[in-house]
Length: 394
Image: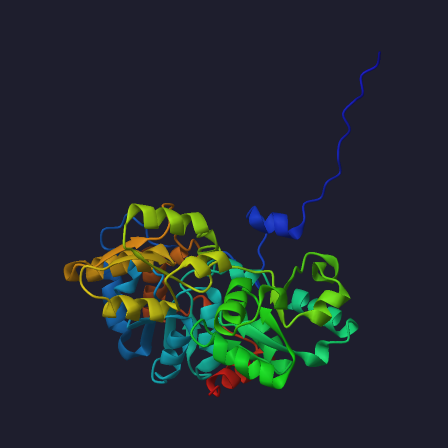
């Protein structure tokens, strides 16, 4: 009897595998790249005072934007808070600010750079603060998808609609091909406009927002929607399926909102009788269908503000915001809980912590421009065209 000798396998790791292992960096990825510079220790008890002094020294030269999902230690230094598009517009409305420090993620800083003047410089405190959803649609993949639609003979009928949570490259593709951008607040208006321009929509990159808007808000059926998977030949779809579809949804999702399940909704209703379930439209379709209320981040905040004292709410969105709202409205007797039992922060958003913010502000105060986010002129032009079409929506 002989024993087979083990053979050595010549396996070469893929670029994606190396990236996930932290052994390579992709400057075009929303995952970001290494952050240069010597960061203060997170245990430094003087961090708050250092941030305050650096911001004070910069004065009107700096304008700090804080996304709703940021941690409290960062939010306290924001001049304005809001969702990504509101913050980008706020930055554009402050032309006297030389530096825009965006406490958010990469695609948000790109949008701010697109909308602000050439004299303004957008800074992201940690370049590794990316967005997994935005990473799910690359320019190369979307170009290949358009080739598939062209071969199917339907490209001329398709209008791309891209969610704000996408890279500048995807926004530029959308602008170049006659499409528009949307937010979670105006997705229905954007789709109404798109269907006036063509017969079909390619919705990028969040499948759930696209599906929920089409089915829940526009009366389409689930059968009107197909899911394009960029990792499969032809997107995993037949030519007939593409030709029959009204909504071609990109296979992308939010890693935070995608975690909420129908079991989460059932469980919270059992635990808290009379609870109102309020979720973001980036959640799965079955979660949205089971919720009492559905809306954008701004909608969630306004709904809780208007809620009667003593009401109970389970919120399906990022935990930093839910916890902040629970503390804010507790004195009014409103009970606000996180929809799921599992803690669910946005891990990339949370990369913007106090040490990174202090480092960025102190560097700027010393005259050193760090971590600038700058979109090239051609990409900026087409991306801005898509954004302007959104701003012109009725």
